[in-house]
Structures are given as C-alpha cells and as structure tokens.
Length: 271
Ligand SMILES: [Zn+2]
Image (cartoon, rainbow, N blue to C red; front, side):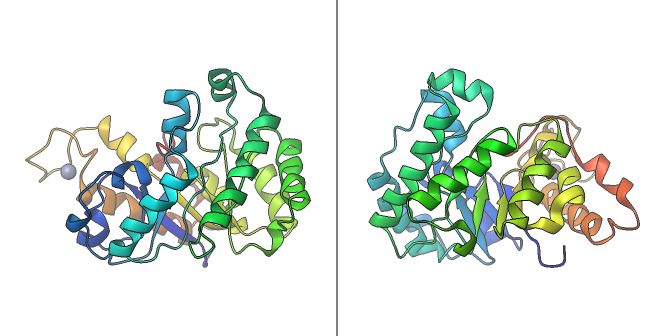
C-alpha cells in the first residue's frame, strides 16, 4: 500500500494550482476553457476522459480521438505533464450497455481500437490502456484483445481498470483486481471506494475518488464553512476527507473499521 498514489477527484481545474493534493480532473472540466486562465499544477495529477458522462448522456462518444488529443495537448502545455491520461473507453455497466444498444464485446473492441488510435495520434502523451468488462472472464478477454493487437498490458506502466466505480460488491472487484495484478498488470482503479482500497489496494498502483463530494452534498457544511450550505465544492472538506483516506490506508491493517465511514453506497467518480 505504501506505494499507492491516491488522486482526489476535483471539479474545478484551479484546484490543480491552488491546492496541495494529487488530483484527478476530467477533460470535460478543462475543454473549452480559456487556456490563458490555466496555470501550472502544483502536484501530480491525472486526466480523465469523462467517458461515463459522455457515453451515458449521448449513447456513445461524440468527441473524436483527434479532438481529444488536440484539446489535451493544449491544456497540458499550460498545466504541465499529467501522470496519465485516460483514453476514450467504453464502460460496461449493464445500464450503459442498454444505453448504447451494443454488447460488452463491442464495447471492449471499441475501447481497444480507441487506445490504438490515440497512441497513433499522440505517442508522446501518457495515454493509458483501459481494460473493460463486467465479469472476470470479460476482463481477461479484454487483455487478450490488447495482446492480439500487439499490446502486452504487462509491459504498460499503468493500465486503467474500467467499470468498477458503480458496483455494490467490492468482493467481485477484488477478484478482478487480484487476478489481473497476478498477471503482471500495474492497475489504476477508477473511482475506487475506500472500502475497496482496504480490501485490494495492495494490488493497485494508483486510484482516484470523488466520493468526498457525493458525501458532502448530503451533509451539512463543516463548522466554520459559512459561505456554503454544503461542502460538495469545498477544498477544506476535500482535504480533510483525503487525509482521512490516507490515514485509513496507513492504518488499515490494525484498524480496518476506519474505512467504512468514508464510503457511500453506490457512488463513484463522475467519469
Ligand atoms: Zn466547506
């Protein structure tokens, strides 16, 4: 666990240069903004493609790989180099599959094709492959799809693990994570719950979460927060939550109960 990098999901790009924590920010929060308003990030950060929002809203990707690469290049020239950039992958939650009218296999095929295309367009950017699926067997088939396309995921510095953030069962995800990690994959867990981190965090290289904001939205503002009714957009709340997560991770062997209060059922980062 000592090596796990934890990125706090943030809504506002200015948190990258105003605040002191490793952050995960969506392309959707950056695209279309004035580039002149962007400053260099203080800490390490990573960029999400915002796929969940785009695919669930429109039933597919509207942003072309070309546009995605052009945008990412423009804002990372100002922000600095991110640790990694998520591809335009296709999530495999059952309701997303119903939304697109396609199949898990087709979502996987498109996910792999998109990664290959992005890599072709921008070999210089740290765009990572993502394994998509729902059941363990799906994920293993996705690893095979990459292999057949000439991409050995065990050689990749980091591989995103898709379709985990909206599940109830952390045991199911733990099985996927431990199996893939045993196969030599260095995994990033998208929107991993803190209970999940306690269970299988040892097998992840990094993880992100925006659970703090969902939690804050349902709670009164912190004492001393007088300018807002709740802390869903509050850096102070986010920082406290993050410190609790990191403390929980450090002590999880001896005090695993600490993790439970940090989680909300069925919430993940808004990808
Ligand atoms: Zn607050």
